[in-house]
Amino acid sequence: MSEFETSKRIPQQLAVPAEFRAECDRHRAEGRRIGFVPTMGFLHEGHLSLIRRARELADLVAVSIFVNPVQFGPAEDLERYPRDLPRDRDLCRGEGVELVFTPEVSQIYPYGYQTFVEVDRLSRGLCGDRRPGHFRGVATVVAKLFNIVGPCSAFFGEKDYQQLQVIRRMVCDLHIPVEVVACATLREADGLAMSSRNGYLQGAERSSATCLYRALLAIRERSLGAETLFAREAIAIATDIIEAEPGTRIDYIEVRDAQSLEPRDRVGEGKTVVALAVFVGRTRLIDNMVI
Ligand code: PAF
Image 1 (cartoon, protein in one colour):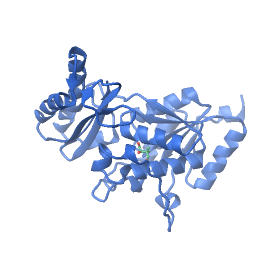
Image 2 (tube, rainbow, N blue to C red; image 1 turned 120 degrees about the horizontal axis):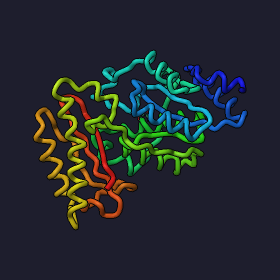
Image 3 (cartoon, rainbow, N blue to C red; image 1 turned 180 degrees about the vertical axis):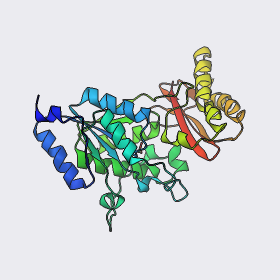
């Protein structure tokens, strides 16, 4: 067994970008394909499923843990965003992650920083309109992380559907040599999509939060039964289910083309995605279903 194989259960944690890049270079020079899972920490089963997929497809798994301030708007919950680095490190160790990158904000955005990546049309609409600058922040940090890590493949959850399309487009447009691997949304037993934000849900909000998935299932069921299901009918179905739950407020429910994210009048006109964002109490949750 090589030194690499025997030591692979102890993740190496580095915070300095140049040091992390040097370590990744070393592994690449020895012929290892790096699978990369970018995260903002507070890891849950959803993240672990990305890590497991990376483990299957790559020789070595690198995880970044970085709460990216640039993707939070001024009125958003940056300070409130949950963090637990020791626990995240333990979880990474349990999954056999080899490299963990934990930079400080000042290392990613040093004084004088002024370069940003914008993916134009895909960043508009849906969460892009509600969270101005969000996808600019995501595209920027992911491009930077790709440059530091140099992975063969990178793993993203389908729950953040618009994010996934934005990153795919960016990789293609900027000729970044990374395979973007989409991983299915992981759900709790009652259907709630796993998210770090679920931890904010208090008391009855937790059961109310299942209305997002129930709304999507109801639309899918109706679309399978109906010859044509118009977007406005689908939105009405979802609205009824969500508004029946106390403490919810719909941010958006939309039917879009699954790839271009252009609006669609009918569910299942080509491949469509039904995407929604709903406040449950103060917590904003998103979910989607491709139909
Ligand atoms: O999905 C996330 O957790 C973040 O948006 C990402 C991709 C790690 C960029 O900060």
